[in-house]
Length: 185
Ligand code: HEC
Image (cartoon, rainbow, N blue to C red):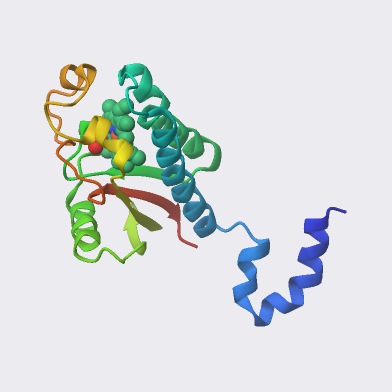
């Protein structure tokens, strides 16, 4: 018997009266959603800080190690766990990430309240109920290498994203949101 199984059995009666403990032993869809958002946000800032150094050449290879690697990992998590991860922005770069009406409202909410760190909402789609967990993504110094002034954008961005709107940010600006959708029980 594993330690985790043993812990579950020992804690089972306690869980009936103290639901707060449940997070320690269960991997609910909600926990999966929060873990996925957290991993993606942390991954992007860690990689940007690692690969964007003063004097470093910023090109498509750099992108593949930062936002490119993050997009790949998000896809990977979706395939492995079934949670649906989406990035959205009003000032988007990839057209796929253009905020829809609901996402725009969420972005405005985070814009208006910089202390708001997450939201949960329930919605129905095609007869099924879902829960959406959303977190804001903020611009850090390292992001400016590709999301700073329009002219300073690396060449590959200017050519590959003709409708790019994801520039002109300052450190601390809201860059967009990440949403993770899971089925609601
Ligand atoms: C090396 C260049 C580069 C750096 C550095 C970089 N990004 Fe990006 N970012 C891009 C490119 C290119 C895309 C478009 C990716 C795609 O086609 O899916 C993108 C897309 C995004 C998206 C998806 C939404 C959209 O507009 O398509 C977010 C969110 C984002 N970046 C945030 C950040 C943040 C936050 C940082 C710093 C922690 C950062 N980026 C650093 C190049 C970069």
